[in-house]
Length: 297
Length: 108
Image 1: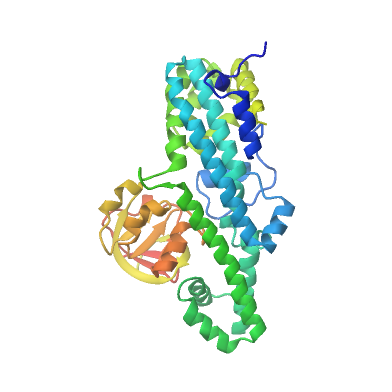
Image 2: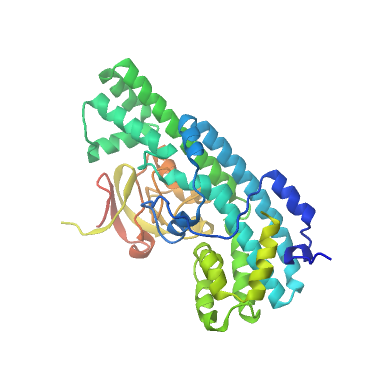
């Protein structure tokens, strides 16, 4: 007789899992750092932490999204909507854990947080991360940013971006575009001016993706970002239950408590990363967690 | 010479002087007064009640395509992003100058 995994016991059946997989939800196991990742200069806490674990765009995706930023926006928002539905689905099962013992509750919360975080890596950060790479011409945003800047400098007859020129470039991206654009039109030949306008339109598509993304994440009624609304209670549930659950190896209990008092996204990386999962948790917990997550692969 | 308190990435140009208002949770947007400088970790649409009153925006994190940057450019107000720790260095009601032409924040 097949042994039920922890989330199956609280009502997430194999059929439910299959349905989500057919919808396109992608989960991988184990959670591990990538060897190559772009380091961005906006990094504090979870942003830099996310870099190392985020599934990068493939070469085909990079090429496709450079050629067609509209496709980036479409794929990003489609994935984000799917991920949001998935998180809301998982959230419904959390109240059922109130009746569970500490072991089951901790195991379930760790499983849900794993799905929440790895789902985020595949369906949200996979795209969103690239919106900060304007200085990386090998990325979709960076390619068009560099192209626009090069054309802008070419039209002005300059070969290096100064602070003053940078400010003018930023004005081009704003509603001041019209007056600055007409100034540039007078200096530029038709081809360069047209190409600059096209490059700026491409950047605007990435801006539009960012705006729609952030609007999808905002719950105006409850005045919270949806993913914080879902993730933070899971995290605080873990803070309360994990210590009594008997799932952490005794010599790492203080370390795990320290991690649980920190930032949730960084924290889930530390706890459930392949290396630390083996280091911090009992074999019993690891086996059951793995059995649950493998249902989703 | 004025003391430089912080540096950041220029997301929307301009120079403005005003009082700091640190808002770490969008639920506190009602604390923002017109003409103050919004200082936060990062913004999202839930911060619009504060942003609409702000003379400038300063964030700890974010790039030139983040919500704060895009919104500031649309509104035509100065914005510095990626200051790392503006929310820790600056204090509520502190009068500062945002120089989003040099990417610096000065004490007044």
